[in-house]
Image (cartoon, rainbow, N blue to C red):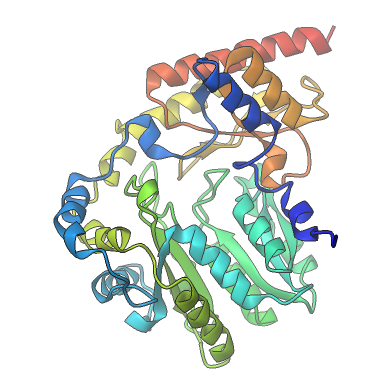
Length: 408
């Protein structure tokens, strides 16, 4: 039988659907053990609900949502996305440039499927959101990771990016605000990334799913707003800003100079048609969400629930000996570092497994985000403050025990 090589390529990047840590968590839950889950941004699981007007609008329109739509999506929500692009300063976008999807994830995979031939390279951040590494591999491409510098607020290292561009490089992925680090990229850095893409004729793939989840008065700049010549694909959706993960409502916007990308756009249109359409109820939520009251602003404002939980998680983690963390400016995650001199971890997946088994706290090991050394982990700060105190307290207890065992 012919060996299926793509499965082995994907095995190390699909952290959320396989692996011993997740298998152990499922087993423990089946045994009735209660686990504090800090591993995934599934917002509704922490009692954060979508705005009521979105829910009511979907219920009201559900009787008329049983049919297929246009393969790119319904006109009204796509028009709402066009208006949103105008608010973000992205010029030249029409309804034809907007594709609706079953979450941004479907559209990311579709965009890479249409772009890559075997051996083509895509520049991805390290640490990354592993969907991108998996989707590049699934499309026959080669993921090439550029370094984000923890000592510089987790901003991309421009020199490292330049050094890794080859004749096979087709695109660069920019995740801003960033998952897993919570970094927010300043305009000057984004302009430099645009210039690199321009010089090397790269497509920019911009993941902006957290563009409203900003703290301390920070402002997000869409990289697509900084050029009208660099072909840019911008991904966004309702999952995070509108606490609607399960609605699977996302969009992709193609902007910049499309004249030399008509074959690529034809491929995108073909793939959009092949999946028939995105789910209609999810599409119906988009116009109401973008045009309604932006309740995310209340959650991230000083004293808001997400802001309080971010501050608490940062404070508690920073007090643990040998743990350092860059305070997130955006998103829902932290990517703490464990000092290797104090925590000589060789296998961070085993570290996550032992933490789960001993303290019933589920995190994701840093190498699950294609970080090269086993000295980081990611956690979400979505639990309410009492549960967050309990969870970090358990992590602290586990690390204290680790220090005793390994630093005698």
